[in-house]
Picture: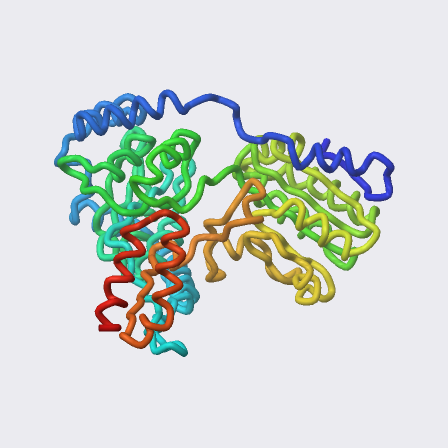
Length: 433
């Protein structure tokens, strides 16, 4: 059974802290194996990637067949039905429109001394987009990673998507085509991350790597950070739903299960101000679990990590949600906009009972690559800004240097950095001649 908590219980705080601190990810130590894989790819390049792909994906490749050819992509895309093609096209258009509004503006101004200051935004030159393969092969992830990068102006996009046993998901390749990505490699795992970070004879290195993956991919991203940028280290999916009694318990149950079916380590939490409604939702979850195709996964997630929390009121519910800092937060209440003003930590907020989280996974517009494991306390979901960097600009006029230079020279002397101070003072001396 999931955990049932009430803020009225005397032991609530201890049990809630225990819920927050529970480790949901497998504690398998993969770092040593990943370090060896990265070192091997750095040393042997394509040969290492090909051997590891044969070992882990049971797929024999050559340098020439690592990348999907244009003909192969066209043939696979042709297998997609018109209905699926239309759905992907609509999703891409909405994602592009949303992210186009995130493009930051350059700025330049003159301050009171006459100095010109500002900043300029430019895209990274190349980005590597990791898309999980096998059972977790999601075309939506292609759109969510590629379109923001393209909107940012990234010149080169390379996708790595493993195809275990040679099984290809045509929808993934169609999503790449719709997003305008033609460089797609059928490799995955830590070896793909290493190839993107350090480059091989076949795969040119990139500047930033984004996209979800398993524990090996996550560990590899940690290890190559600094050599390249990364988006985040994603953990198991999670959803928190704040709902009042004026909701259909079955709808809320399905929303909770929409994340539970991702992974046995996923977490689904209901917070409500009505105990009877909480029980009704729990019963609805049990009924739906009998019919879901992925009921084994969803059931394990709900039993091990699910929770129903009863609060005194919705303000208390919002306060608890902020402590959880969930990846996905649904506000199924009478005035979701007002309650959202009390939320300070959440990856994405879905307002009202007609906005299920699943809309955000596919077609809402905002990105579905979001911070997990309480990291929404200090980070944001993937955006156009993840593929851009800001360069500051400064230009001193003689008058501006006279005004602020002496202070700079003094501060340099206070830090015992003589050349720093002299580089300013030499110019001031010339101006004062």
